[in-house]
Length: 144
Image (cartoon, rainbow, N blue to C red; front, side, top):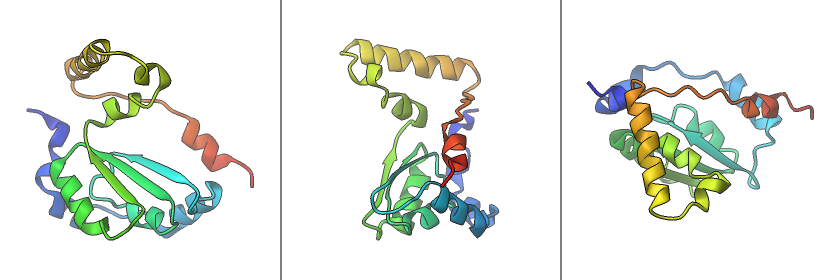
């Protein structure tokens, strides 16, 4: 069974019953990252957008990459009224790595072959990839 889109089958129930984040988390995030109209935020895998609205309300330019078509549709319904809301229905990790300089400049057919190889490797590894990235931790801990 492909677990990649499991929750995408039940977006309304997922949205209704999943626990929410506390408001203090968003206050801290907004303050530490100085979120405002001049900032850009990328959320990879937002699901039904449980963290989205508090971020949108800061006025930042928000973009989400969501694999599930049903989650994407639900997010568009919930947040489409915000001018600063953008969502892409695509493979999160491939979209993420395509923002690296070496991947942007990679020419065809090497680029499509490279991405196909990455997808295959992820699927062969049980359709799971673990990324250890400390950049967000540094942003949150940055002194004011």
